[in-house]
Length: 175
Image 1 (cartoon, helix red, strand yellow):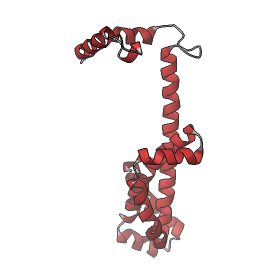
Image 2 (cartoon, rainbow, N blue to C red; image 1 turned 90 degrees about the vertical axis):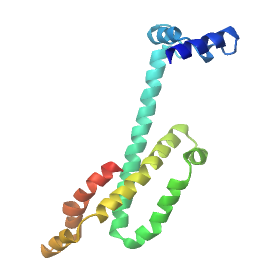
Image 3 (cartoon, rainbow, N blue to C red; image 1 turned 30 degrees about the vertical axis):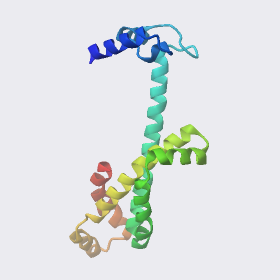
Image 4 (cartoon, rainbow, N blue to C red; image 1 turned 60 degrees about the vertical axis):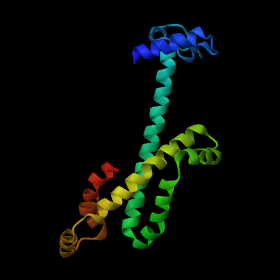
């Protein structure tokens, strides 16, 4: 791989392509990593890469957390009401069928901000698997556990907090 890279870089360098750094040699990449030369905005190349990586990871984590939270809440609402499940679930499947590349420009035009749209796209990507798997976890509880909670005269919130939510946690993390 290194040999192929160097051969490609040499061939491109001999053809005098513009821009010149279209395929730099590996020694140039390594030198740029350790260079103290300011490239843009008073930062080195390494600082620019690390700053960009930090922003990307922050957006991805924020979108993932938002999507996971909304997915859990929607699964809980769908479990509470079978009517809501029958209304919402087909639209959840539609969201999953739309390609992200087709959805991204629409979300960008709605939000008007590239950073918000990236967070929203990450949330949409994590929303569907969490919602469907958590709902499957809620539905996986055995009838005997329902009967036991009924015998103890447990309220609905006790059923959810003691039986359904703990049973759905493995499914939630799978999602």
